[in-house]
Length: 139
Image 1 (tube, rainbow, N blue to C red):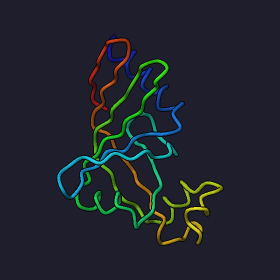
Image 2 (image 1 turned 180 degrees about the horizontal axis):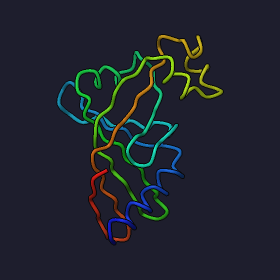
Image 3 (image 1 turned 30 degrees about the horizontal axis):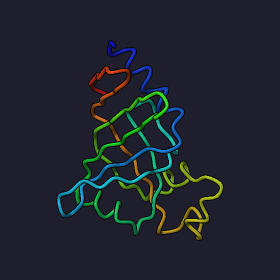
Image 4 (image 1 turned 90 degrees about the vertical axis):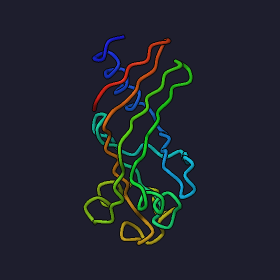
């Protein structure tokens, strides 16, 4: 598979995925993986998530911003890993941008809840796997 086809299939995978796995580095040096709701993305370059400010994930990212995001389609035996870094955002513009109906279940004070944070992942490169083909590309 050539890079343009891999990137096209990777974009389609991201677009239809409800969940993405976010990998961060724990303070003990071991990787940590967490399923996150795939709230918003801009191509393969930016992926946006929301999470609790008080979470272990935010503490890890404030110590080490390096991360990866993984999408998988088990039915088609397809996967995409994006590698880059995450910014933890607390500005009102970012919080309002990602706010969705139902979030008050997790953030009772609404969009201004201090325990509501936005994560902006920016990819540097990716690796797409499908049908025994593995393609690595810059994002």
